[in-house]
Length: 305
Ligand SMILES: [Zn+2]
Image 1 (tube, helix red, strand yellow):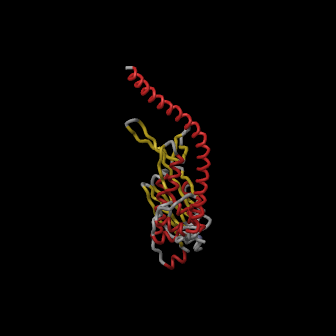
Image 2 (cartoon, helix red, strand yellow):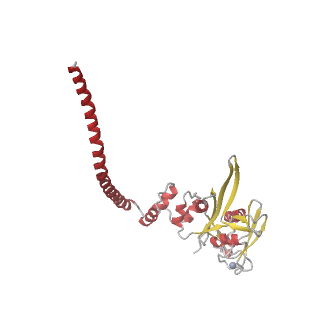
Image 3 (cartoon, protein in one colour):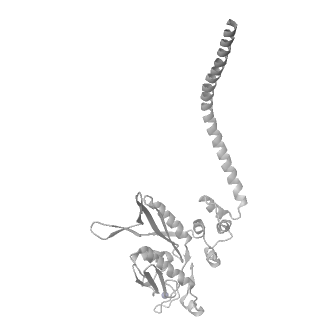
């Protein structure tokens, strides 16, 4: 009996003691030592690895590229083109935005416009409004709309942005975002405006002026959106922009200095007014103008040097 008990005790004692010893010794020593050493070593290693990788990437890229300046501009913004047109622009096969419009290609990435038209300006059209204390409307950059949900009201903020280089190119874009993030909506609208860029046909179609410079438009056009009809009429030099204040922004960005306009409908809806003007410009681009008249008015699409 004694032998059996002793044996059992020995076995029982031996097994837990070893296990406990292993666990006790293993965990604290490993964790304490490893933590202190590992953190320091890892940081250094990571830093060296990251720096080595960056150096190698930077060294590898320039020899592969064909045009170094274009690639540098693209790489500075951290942009990697996804569309075929974007890749051509980065490689330097397309160097002018007129080429894109002539071929009728679709601009799928706003960075294409940033590279080809570096001096692009933008204006926010004040589409929104809040009613003030003493009546009237205080105009705001974003329009807040409400929709009903089963859990209550949901708000959306939308913005309208116009871009142009002041010399024959213009675009407008609208986008919506959550009501708390107006900046997000404005940035999205700016991006959209760049994608919607169109050339503007300019000339002097006024019989009072007859100068064949590019300060007005060559012929009368009508654009519409919703209830708004806008008729743009060529004006002689010195008249200025005879349009409302929000429409002046788009005229300035397009590079038009003198113009008359007749409008009909709810022009206080600024979104529709701007869209009607863009519609008028796109219709102007589609007109086929007689050659002698084209020469007399100095009609030209897009940039004028
Ligand atoms: Zn003129």
